[in-house]
Image (cartoon, rainbow, N blue to C red; front, side, top):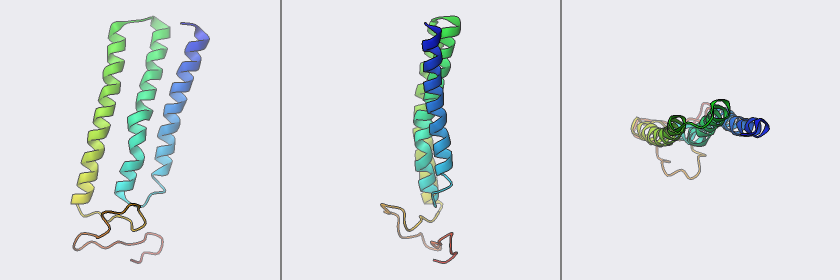
Length: 129
């Protein structure tokens, strides 16, 4: 593989994956409830991390040539990241709902608008319901 092509591909995949992770991390500060935070971080784990794995594979491909074991490890890593991120997001969302975490009233669509018994929906800006 041409060195310039390898450098460009590693840069594109690595920077794109890193920017997805960074934008998701910054967006987590803007959302108000746990369900929205889980929703914001899902693209980072489902797309950002696999892009970084692909960048590492392209770098390894350029540095040491094609190897079936390296390709298999990259494919398994990407599949595991996708599976684990979807299962983890689902589990975290279920635990947030079952624990009674309030959903911010401006979350749209807000199908969980009624807080569980004993929980109160409080606006964090004014500390009032």
